[in-house]
Length: 110
Image (cartoon, rainbow, N blue to C red; front, top):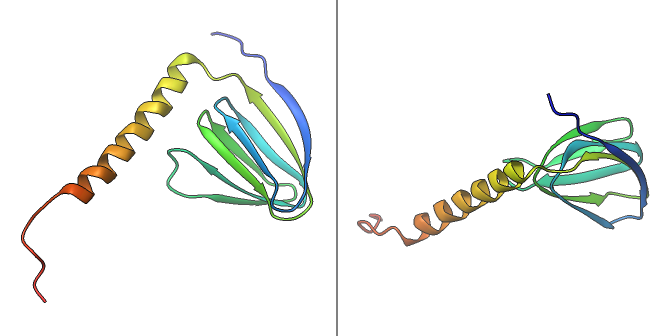
């Protein structure tokens, strides 16, 4: 089994301030305040309050503070395979959206 080195960082954010993470597996823990986060490829967003944590899946992640907040970010660098997998999932999702908009069929009856 391969060992990975995780680094932990504490970050203070003001209301509506964004933090963007580009890949890497790990965990986000809200120490104080609250935060909203969305991960590329995940079907739902997550809202975390003080003391709550969320596992990161190695995707592009956007975190927004919902007030003055302090977060602990623990991340291991994303492997090339993980980054490729995330890119392929995003590409598939985008392709499905485009195909759905381009599909032609009979006009809906009124």
